[in-house]
Length: 202
Ligand SMILES: Cc1cc2nc3c(=O)[nH]c(=O)nc-3n(C[C@H](O)[C@H](O)[C@H](O)COP(=O)(O)O)c2cc1C
Image (tube, rainbow, N blue to C red; front, side):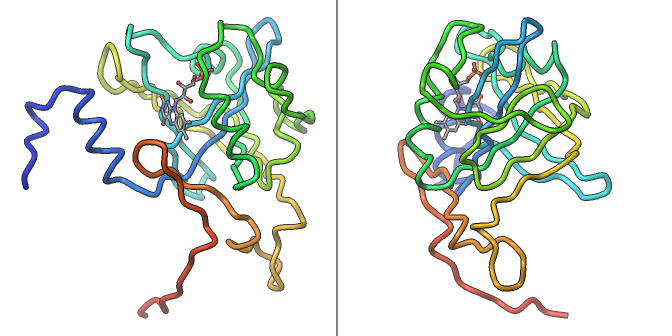
């Protein structure tokens, strides 16, 4: 089959994208409002960008009314965030944070997710996350307008907290121990427990 994305409705394009571009890592982003209220939300349009300088990105899209998500409103007010990675045992708490809460209501408090203060940024991090990146906003790039248009958030990585429990014999994170979840289409997920190796050509 062949799909013509130039004529697809945004909702339909979204469905085809999330059922083909997979598995997608999940950025569980903690942010804070100008009033000091914390927010925590998952985003699977997420990737590392480059290491010079260390940079990552994730993509909150506008809601169906065309409004900005709380994460974007907070980062515009306080340009700092933490990207927490999601292991399998945290998947249900992560998913709960996709609920629509009124602006200013904290997912940390609502869902009993334990936080710890960050070292360099104001939003706290998720205590149980195997990896958490403290980031300062680099820039926001707007793609499109209205419902489902994106505010691509680029963040400079200032520090990472990596649980000793996920380190392998070589001192680097081990995919099996990390047991991170990846998003597939619909309600489905995968984990980093299913791996294989390929030697890279010279
Ligand atoms: C696994 C998962 C991945 C998601 N990925 C995205 C995404 O990439 N972009 C997006 O805008 N929303 C995504 N969502 C939906 C947001 O998490 C949801 O809209 C959330 O309420 C936004 O929270 P906020 O308004 O507090 O920022 C995802 C939800 C889940 C469960």
